[in-house]
Amino acid sequence: MGFRAQLAELASRFKQEVAFYRALHAHPETPKLARGLLWLALAYLVLPFDLIPDFIPVIGQLDELVIVPLLLYLALRLIPVSVRQACRDSVQVALTQK
Image (cartoon, rainbow, N blue to C red; front, side, top):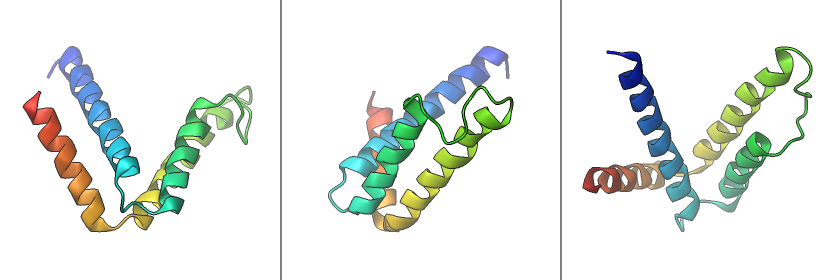
């Protein structure tokens, strides 16, 4: 598998995951705390301030690699399995129809 194919697969997977989290956030059975954690993860990733400033070498960039997945993990733990599966299925169906 060439580099371009790997990059295309990675971009496709990223697109799938973004659609999945959007579907989770929009689902009516998603708990409010889980929605808040999803928003917090997005805000921490996008906003310019961090708990550990980025100008500190290595550690400044690693905090995003720890905090954002932790927030997503906690949000997913709060969401019922049936809701997660329904959202995953709906994203899969939507992407196959395109």
